[in-house]
Length: 77
Image 1 (cartoon, rainbow, N blue to C red):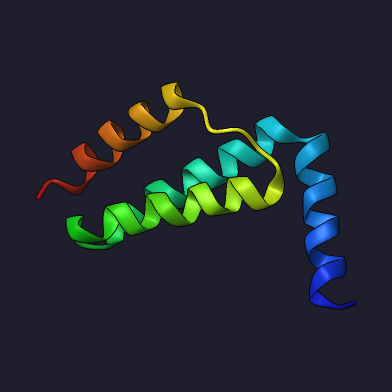
Image 2: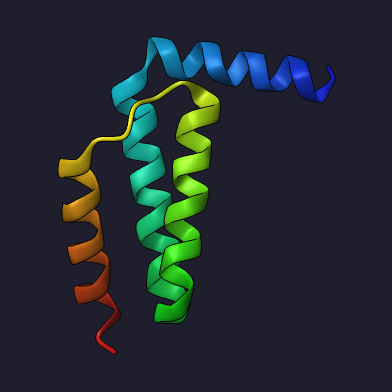
């Protein structure tokens, strides 16, 4: 299986399970932000946005705002 096949398979899963995929991206983003310095947060957000674009998922402003707030609180820095 090549990269394009894997990407197409991921896109198919994401389109059929968009809520689960969004939750997985949000959870991964939060975990990364907990373990990295604050100056990396913007790069993490950019990466998650790029993943959403590749998977054909729309950005949800509501989730992004809540996610940012929750990630900062957990760091305790």
